[in-house]
Length: 139
Image (tube, rainbow, N blue to C red; front, side, top):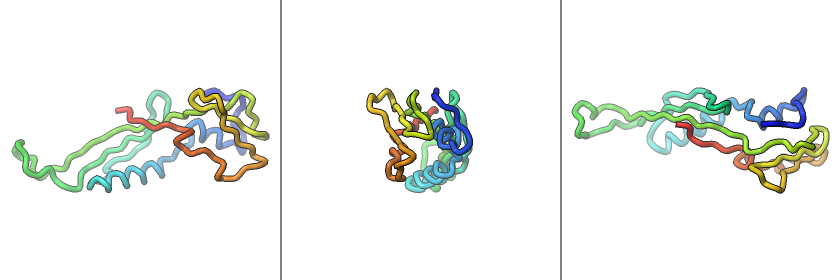
């Protein structure tokens, strides 16, 4: 992701926007919640990188056994699955952006950029994370 400015002291949000500061805490909690909704639990979770983008490897194990099956000896086994989720930034800083002034973002080629003015800023002004990032399964 190209930018017209360099991230300096106090500009950590630029690194966050580029996907460089994801810790995985929220991702792990979301994986735990989704697994629990499906009578399973997260049995492995780690950070990953796919084609230069940050992501997370998750392994899930069912809380129940396979049960009666046509395969002998599998009745007491638990099903396991794993996947890698990749996070891709959808937005880039507009070429004219300056962190001391209004900052503009172009997202997925949208003609109307998102603008954030640090002098007139409220937390509610931030776009939703789904506007800034896409998440998809790599495998």
